[in-house]
Image (tube, rainbow, N blue to C red; front, side, top):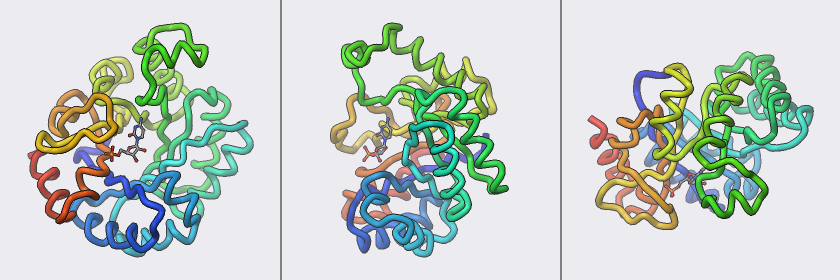
Length: 234
Ligand code: C5P
């Protein structure tokens, strides 16, 4: 677990020039950026390179949530690690032990320092929706089980809700990253996030790093909004 909490700013856009400008303005302030499906599906490897060039010192989280057979996920992890050596990359814990172990092995074989995270249950799912997809145990139990499986399969941490951070920290111990979206400064719009916590509160609950998008990217002054969030952690 690194000592300083990082704020990964989510660059959620399909507009390449916008992502480049966001990366240039926000990267030096937060020191960490996240690229997800919207951007990567629009601009692919060249887009990732553009963002890395715009913010060369920022830690990058490539959030593509791989979920496929072990061999296919291993190949995807190998390709991303070789080409971009991101700080973080993620897979779905629901892919199972063999898939996570294959991802870990592929990552290690590239000798990058990329950390692998597992997504347990998507925080957008409510309890009735979880039952609808066929899971039977209650949400907290399920998230704990999947986080422990992820740890046991070699993952470096999980993406989780800040409301799950306290019990996951207790269950999974100290050397396990808990990266939480669903974070909002107290003066900010919740947008479509269901339950939110302030950055400081999320860290005090046990989150290692945070993912924050629109409170920064929708702000009139991006660098200032990012700086205010960084300052709120002091
Ligand atoms: O704009 P906002 O701060 O809500 O952005 C949150 C980011 O975190 C988005 O990129 C979203 O895809 C991601 N995320 C999330 N909830 C999860 C996993 C990822 O909001 N459970």
